[in-house]
Image (cartoon, rainbow, N blue to C red; front, side):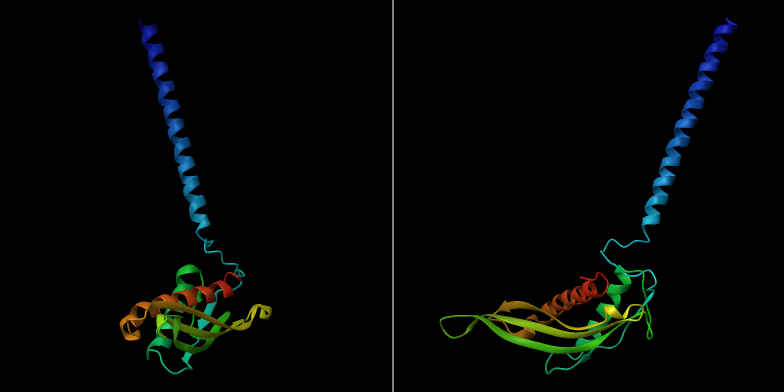
Length: 188
């Protein structure tokens, strides 16, 4: 009888030991997976191709160099640009002497009539914003450029610009910021 209980006791200990090993193995896999995922956090999945030596970016004030447009347009654009670099890169935005420097002018704020109708009126109005950006890469001067970026949004002919401006301008600026970011950080 004692032999039978001791055999059951031995089997129970073996099962408990096997369960401990399984739990330790599972814990090991979970911790390794967590470590791997955290390690990947240093890489950006936005498609950036920035040199690892680049640590900072400076966005100098873009100025309004055209008639028209809201008075706060340059400030809004500057903040959107800085925020985008902070959100989608590991770069620190610094007030001056960054490894990368962006500056420029808002050179166009145009209301255009498109899609003419038979009554010589525009079927659709278009708000187009153009930004001339100058980019300096202080770690690799071959990446420097000066380029215009432009985007537009259409709105119905029966509506005024003032009715649509607060809705359209952020969309246009978001696209221009994305285009500049892709040109500077993703090298597109």
